[in-house]
Amino acid sequence: MAWVAIFITAKALKLEKYGFEIKAYSLVYKNKSVNDVLIRVLGRTRAAVSVFANVSVIAGFIMMGFAFWFLLNNVSNFFVAQSEFNELTVLIPGITLTSAPAITYFLLSIPIVLVMHEGGHGIVAALEKIKIKTGGFAIFIAMFAGFVEPDEEEFEKAKKISKLRVIGAGATSNVLFALVLGVVLLTNPFFAMVVPEPLLSIFYELPEGVLILSIIENSGAEQAGLLANDIITSINGIPILSPVDFPSLNPGDTATVSVLRDGQPLDFGLTVMPAPDDPERGLIGIMRDNSFAYTPVMNFIEWNDPNVSMFLLWLWMI
Image 1: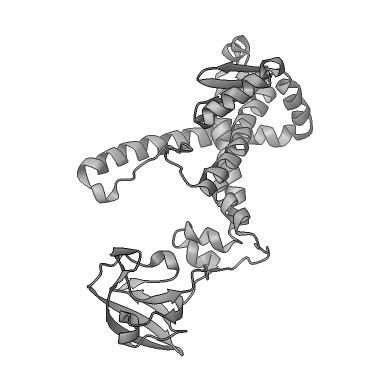
Image 2: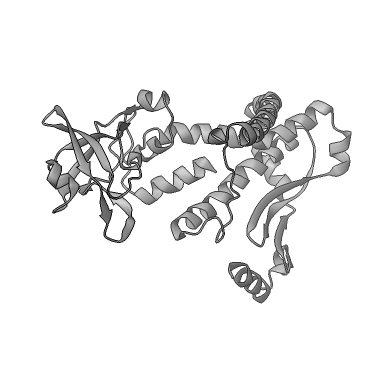
């Protein structure tokens, strides 16, 4: 439905007059002035772009090697060790992305990622004196793409090292952008969700656990003796540092909950209760603090808007 709306709107606005190519399955925009913009940018950044172009050759081979290793290792895990197999999902709005916030963050991130990627190709092509005929973007129903179109004859005549620089520049620019953005996000508590150990312990002060705000009446937690302001540190031996660490529990099972009470460690055994809205989902019977209690070591930026934090996290992941 979204594609139908885009197609009808593009036709109604007669976007063909502004450089758009509109077909039943695609919307393509081409701009012939991209090369002039790249040359102007290059005039101010030639030394930095030259270093970047050389780094891109090495980085390109490293990333290509890693991609082959990951693919072969993942295929092997599918047959030999399925617990270590990593499923890959193509992000398609409305199909694999269904929530409105996720679709919004994705659609806001894609143009930035494409500009960084294609801009990397284009600026290095300008450095190597390979003309860019057009640059732009394309939408294929629910798929997005960006491009810079080099002059085929000039590209073919270019030295092999020049071609390698141009080819490697796109992915390298994305990696460098992700590294810079990642450093900024290390000041953000939300980023702790995706930071692995040992980096997590280096860049964040780890919380003691998850705070209990209140106890549900007649629940297993109340019967076991848990109290408000207890801090849950583990459930069934699983360390609990944030709400996302809570394990799935089955109603009727017995769970062992470890807490800190006034600094003293205590263990409780309780019966898991069914959730009122889903009898097959188990609850221990508490209202918990769902905020992320990780404190960044580099705590010099105030992150007051969670929407900004989640958008930047999506941008970094994409």
